[in-house]
Length: 494
Ligand code: UDP
Image (cartoon, rainbow, N blue to C red; front, side, top):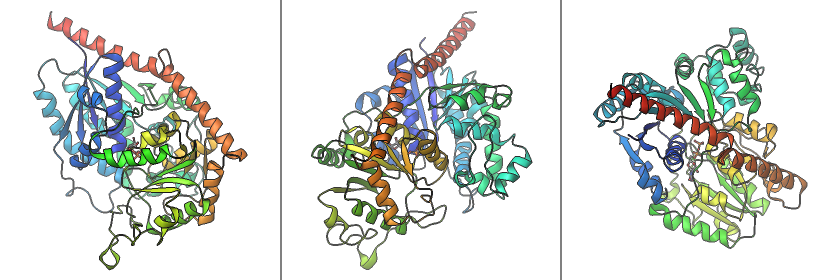
């Protein structure tokens, strides 16, 4: 009987893509059978992006979409995004349970969930499955999650009230400007409890897998494993198995035309001359920020590919809205109404504006790409690292401000203006200066960033190679799954 594992993904491409990629790796490197259960707010959007997956991946993975659940009776405008995702997962649990119940024998030996899916551990226990978390972010953020429920009141008050750095034992401190929503909204007790509950669930996992690698965050990992530091609170072993990112394969399906246009445009550009600009799949900028960014890009005279999503209003839930001045969405030259008039004409020789979605991993892997202006989500960060591309940080939400500090201050592979954040409207000349700093090939800073990120890229390759730390860690997890299957077989045969 072969080993079969079940992966459960919470809503959002930032969770689904690394989960799918982990599934791909378990199949191709370790010959497991893999089923992925997807909780999605909008299956049709996710489905269309899934076509970007190479055919061999699509054929190997069984991907099942659970029917959408309605959380509106339990959530309101003040519900934090973290809590909304937890709610969606909790309300999907009966579906997860009945799906597993109806699976023909042999059932999967292990359930792997992302950080939001730990509510499924009860179900896994019921069916005798191993319980793993795959944290799709980094170890520093995991340390914060683990510490959250144990932090003394005095530590919390110094951070929340006095805005002093949050000291996490044995780890880099989190300065208040980088802090998470949970500490900015102390009145939101539901959010606090959701963090605490997730921390408690983490302690119940058989293993915590994480999308980082030993050599990237050695000190923080040491603290999490040290029984005198965070090891007191995190009983399961932590297995860094990353960087797990989408492999670069020829694209197919729905985005073929759009993707081919971008890639053939990149083919015409000089080596490492293009800045890729994208704020990811989760949120977008407001109109004032977009206007300044457009001016900053234009003034820098650097080549760029900019993935543009319509601006948001400044509220937390910021639903996308359409600007339809005078009933139209574009100026005559094709410039979207929310960018400065004439932008498309003035930048047509050296810039490409791409609506909504682009084949990101192919762009970052292209020889013409020389920099990445990003919101610093952990997925795009890893995609930049594995392609050796230096970054400009403009963090927006979740742990992205911590990531930006890690990239610019701890690792030295990115530039960041301290003012660049979710609410700030950066002056155009600050944007221009950052772009020039990274893309200016003859400038010392650009060279230094590029050589630093190349070094980190080499380190990440070594971790993934056979015998490397991440390869070995995943092999150990697979071995545990196979032992579980053998034990079940032995029990079945008396
Ligand atoms: N992505 C993409 N094209 C886009 C935006 C995102 O291919 O235009 C992919 C990206 O490569 C990543 C995933 O979607 O693998 C999630 O991206 P996001 O930036 O939202 O990640 P997060 O911030 O959640 O880490």
